[in-house]
Image (cartoon, rainbow, N blue to C red; front, side):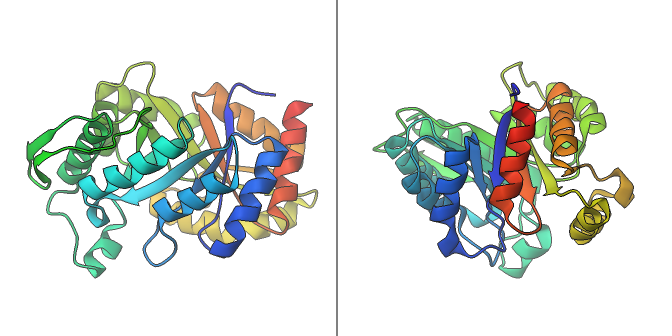
Length: 290
């Protein structure tokens, strides 16, 4: 099929009670990953990951992403270690800055978002390994904290980041990087360079979210994706036509997915828009197999 891991997002707008059935359906299709979202006001990422893991047998589940300002590193490490011990080898933990306006709205905006993210990732990884953590950082303070039940197989901790300084931070502190929707093959070389500048080695993973809509009517596909694409274009600071998608007929979507893999993506996570997302996912997987 392809050397790239194929994942699918359980969109934040879908009802939480639909998650167990969706997870079982996509696992049956043969997809590698299911990623859940933690955005303020929607669903809890750790609880959603637990639901998806419990509903399936082999699926790897990613949390994409836990906002560092909302999460005590000690509590986050406790939650992740619990999941990792019960479901070894099946969890990926994403941590990010969080949307600054959202963080301010609940009174947890960091004075230094970069320091908070790096100190959170570093301490969570150490706690998951069973280390006793002493940290008097700019944002994180841990006085001899140690998990009683650390992860027997520590899950990868990846940074969900966008800007060059944050990408360098990811290369320095995290096991991998998670990229937002809209980044295409032409973006990945510069992104990889920023990550390497931070000190990332060859084993640093790159996961890419991608908007996806599959159908034979090109105009309908474009209409389906337009609101998301236009909104993301403003956030990324680029015109809508430069927001990369995995879309079109199934064969075209599969080719776009292969292009991300050829450019260096280790995992591509499809954020599917339009009716029957499981059917759309199945069509892409079938096209890849052909």
